[in-house]
Structures are given as structure tokens and as C-alpha cells.
Length: 495
Ligand code: SF4
Image (cartoon, rainbow, N blue to C red; front, side, top):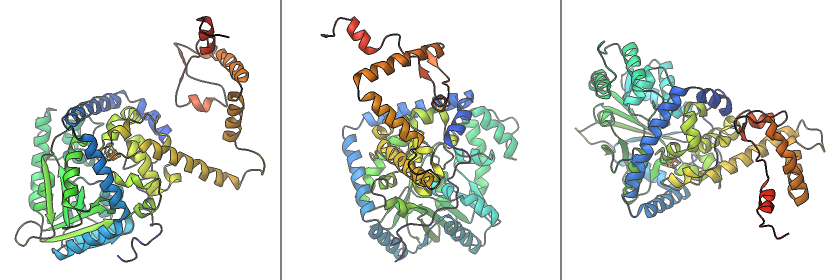
């Protein structure tokens, strides 16, 4: 532990965050899927409305957000101290703490622990940290089967699919699709299964019950870890988490190091912020907390794997470190106009949406997710919704600047000295035009020639080099009169 957080940077993961294709290409495919857009639109608008209603009930919502932000900032400033305190408390209560610098180390630790428990399978609570490190695949390579028990994660696992939302991983699936997956993959599903939600939930319940009762090992993530007592906390809605956390004899929790909080008083703040922001509930149905091992009650062996995987490197960035404040509520996704239209798969990252666009490039390096900081209209809705007030738009702008600098540095090796880049030429030309009213007016007149390219009020394709702009978006047709002409014609111009 002594050198763990002393590292100036941390070894990166094994690439599970990296998308298979850049966001613009993946988004274009997603936008062409009308069923996906319908599913996403319905799900996000429902969650948005629920969240807005329960948030409006609290007169001190803004004070709670401020408190959440302040607690997280303090925790990040003293992260080494709180983690050592957490380790000491968990150890004193009979648990064992392991430190993993990256995905490979974390996966190895978990596989070894499962095999040491004499098992070849484990039941799992939904956990983004284990998705981030690709735990299920790593366990499969070691001959161990991990059974997802969260209903949505079960749908993803049976459908050989990828999660598309951090809270509702199967948000892109409708109930007819889920019925078809269950009938095809479950093995023990009733052939007369309907697509009624209650029938689908019952099929999953029956399928999972045997696994819960026979599992010797449970695997979880953690929403919070209280440093002062060594208490871990998992919030969930279905009760599957409670089963995983209490029935097996061995419990392994994989937790990102940023999830620690100093005290129980701090937990009170987050237990108000998180359910309202995520599922739009005053309180989530199941909140399970445990501290070490209690003889004769619950798991008799508890292992806590503390995962770095790029977090200390992110912490070292004064601008970017606030992304580590995230409590994974998903509110920013549900309000994001880009996410609502493309869904999570287009981001090619375990963490999609606005938070994914700032977290993934930092965890894996900007170049690995270079297109993500541009996957935003910078409208600011994510900042307004975030319960811990992460200024995502500013982080996105900062990451864009870093990407431009890194690209410039890389290109500098190949560029002819003294020859400016195309962006530099474009910006210099725009600056020259805008610096003089007559030049600007002339440019507006020239722009009106673009009206000939429009159809139905939109320009869908511009000639090169401007075609790069219209490849991913269209433009409104320039108005017949400029603002200046309209102003003059209206008689308001004293000149
Ligand atoms: S960035 Fe904020 S709104 Fe988005 S998931 Fe994290 S805590 Fe929630």
C-alpha cells in the first residue's frame, strides 16, 4: 500500500474501455435504428420525469448538491489517508484488502480467490468496476463462470450483448426482445412465456434462485465505502444484490478507489442524492451495508479489491480530477440530447453518456477515446442534473483542448516547419473576417449563396473542405435577409 498512491501515474487497464470504432461512425449506425431510438426516448423521458418530481420535493436540494460536491472534493484531496483508514478498519473487522494497480491485477486477484474457495462459479451483483476491467471474460479464461443476477445484466449476458446505460444496462431492449432472448437462451424458460413485465421478471427469478442457493462465492461492486468504520454499501432495486451479498460463504468486492467517503454523516448526504438522481425514487428498495465479517451471519470470508486502473493518473490532473466525484447515478445520461438519440453503445465505453465522455478518455488516455469529448452539444443539461455538480461541459472543453494539443504535437513530427495546420488556417481566416464589419457583411452576403444548396430549409451536404462538417450534421439554410438588413429595413438603424 505504501507506494500505491505514491505513483505519479498508474498503469492503465487492459483496453476494455476502448471503443471498437470512433463515436461519429458508431453514432451514425445507432441513429439509423428507429427501434433503438424509440426505446431510448421512452425510457429516458420516463426516468427524467420521475427524477424531476422527487427532486422538486426537497427544498434543500441545492444545499445537498453543494454538500455532495464538497465531500467529494475533500475526499479526493486526502484520498491516501481515507484509503489507509478504510483498509485498517476492514482488516480489523476480519476482512482482507487487496490493492490492484490495473485490470490485469484485479482480475487475477479475483480469479485466485474464487479458485481458493474451491469454486468454479460465482454470482454477481451489477458492478461497473468489474465491467470496466472485463472481469467476466477474464474469469471465463480461467475456467470460472460468473452469473449476472441483476435482471438487466442477465438480459445482457444471455443476449451476448453489451450494456448501454450504467443504471439500466438493457435500456436499448424492449420487452418483446427480452422475451425472445429468454426463450432462446435461458434453457429453463416456460415456452408459453409472455412479454408481460411481471412474467419476464418471474422467469428470471426462477432461473436465478437455484444459482443463489448453490453459490459459494459472491462478487459485488460498491456504491460507497465508509472509511471511519470500514463499512461497504450497495444500493439496488431488485433484492438480487442482497442475496449475493449475504448467501455465499465468500464475498469479493471490487471497488474503484474513488468510492471511499470519510464518515457515516457523509453517507447520509449521498443516500438522499443518489436514489433521487438515478431511479427517481425517494429511497432505493434495498440498501445493504456490511462491515468486515460477522461470525455465523453472512459471508465468513470477505475480500475487498481496491482498484486504481488509471484513477491516480486522473487524480493528478487539476482540471480532470472532478470526474472522479461521480457517484454513477446516470442523471447526466438521461438529460443528454446526444445520449438520448445514440444510446450507450455508440460511446464504445463502459461509461457512456456525458460522464463517459470525460471519464473514459482520462482513464485510458485521451487518444484512446479521442472522439468522446466531441460527443456533446455543450448544452449544460448534464451539469444542471449532476447531484455532485461536476462541471462536465468545462471538462469536455478541456479534454478537447488536450486532444488538439496532443494531435498537434504528434503531427509536428511530420509537418513541414512553418506550414500551419488546416485548423490554424481556418481560425486565422475566421478571425480576419470577423475583425472588420465590412468584411463580415461581405462574408454574410457570400454565405447567402448557400441557399441554393438547401432543401426543405436544411443544407444536408456542403462541398469539400466543408463536407467534413455536414458529414455528421445538417445546417439551416441562411435567411434571405441578414440581421443587419432586417434591422435597417425595419427603420431602427439610426445610420
Ligand atoms: S456525472 Fe454526475 S450526473 Fe453523471 S452519473 Fe456521475 S454523478 Fe450522476
